[in-house]
Image (cartoon, rainbow, N blue to C red; front, side):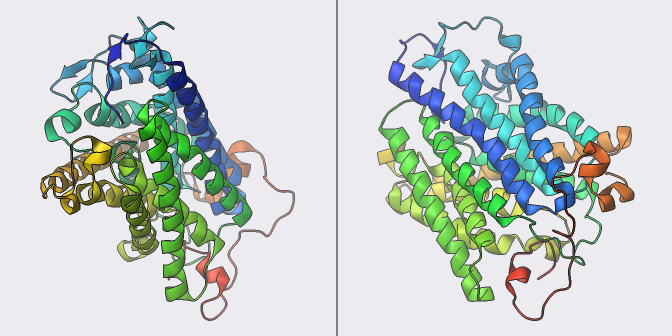
Length: 440
């Protein structure tokens, strides 16, 4: 994201109009994610997944306005690690204050939608089995202790990754994707696997809902990446095109692997490939050209299609593949900046393939390691503390019955039988291919 500081260079109505639209697009991504995740779980947990996303909007908004924005984007308070509290509670920021050429209040809101989505993304790793009350505690604590510091490192004034290390992250490969992926892995280890993991079929119960959710995510991602230019300009246009291209090549890459490996290109694979490509282009959309975007998306589609099976090999239950898609895709996109960055986009920095040497690749790798390690360790510690205080896992009875009934006293459907374990048919059936929750 373009570095910004509180300034009064003059309001640009075109930039403001575009960022208003982009903010609405990014906010829509969280309901889109709710549908995407909701379609991927079994019928007994659909509403719980929707609720985990929707309640994140409310929780993160309160935390962000009270202290999160100030700590992330306020003037650096300590060695590039965290901002100050000068704007806690949005004190001192009025409608006429500007960040760059847009109102600071709008920039605050745009950044808020990123924080909301990142928290909601984590829920996919612990689907079907986390206490809702524990989620209500986790989200605000995690936002303050994990998301906010990383956002300051990468985007905030004086942030050490941006200013000292020199790593590039245009729209959130480090801040959003790697952060949510490493956090999802940490919580999956704290909570443990679902009952029946690697034994029972846990197929998506509603693939049309998955496809609709993926479509809404793709739509919103144009604002997510294009809005990160913070202006209605050529960089925003290039970012939007790169986002579209990477989503397409991510889809094609995933389907190619499915066809070659399993003999069937699936709708579930198409939706997953789109998201993988979008994840990977997020850090790179403002630093690579169209050819680079195509390669980034294709690489993510191929790599992530294999990475989702790692949970069976390493025995961690990442229910909806937050690690396999968001963490791995974020790493792919962030590292490939070091190869495909072009000064035409960056204004100065070239990657290895454009004559810039290996220095930028090393900086990108250093940022990946730092963010992944900090995020994993902090989230693991937060999860352990909450577990000791109130428990993080639903009871066995609640999990078997379903969290929709036991927690929310509701049911998504009036009929039963959908989304429950059924016998596998021999060979490479379509049903088997659509089930990433049982061992291949």
